[in-house]
Each structure stands twice: as structure tokens, then as C-alpha cells.
Image (tube, rainbow, N blue to C red):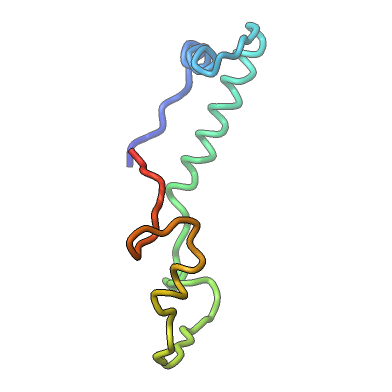
Length: 98
């Protein structure tokens, strides 16, 4: 696992420039510290303590509920075309998308 690099004042200024945000010198220092604390916290999540934790696929005890496949009557062509805004030669006409 690669170690997270420390955010410099220059990097914070670059991020502010990319976000089109003007920061004062005090704000640059404040946000640099905050960004470094966020990265430090995120880095701690890379190595969780998993000793004695059983693997799981889902946090809840659930089972798949299946139903029987039952063939049902669908729409015939006339019923399907009756709801279309435009029909031409037995087909639904849709706007051209380029």
C-alpha cells in the first residue's frame, strides 16, 4: 500500500486555483492542515483491524426469494402501437438521435 503524501501549501493553492476559489494566506494554511488531517484519517482506513472478524457477503441475514416463472399474455401489435405518439408502416417512430 502506497503511503499518502502530505499536502503542501503550493498544492492547496493549486487546488484553490483549479476550483476558482481565492484564498488568503491564513486560509491556505488552515485548509492545508485540514486536508492533511483528512488524508491521515483516510490512510488509517487502509489498515482496519480484522482479527477475529468473520467474512460476510451481506450485513443482514437475507435469502433470495424466487417465484415461479409464469407465462402471461402480452400486448399484441395493435395494442402496443395504440399508445405510440407516431406510427409508420406498423412501427413506432422515434426522434432521430445523432
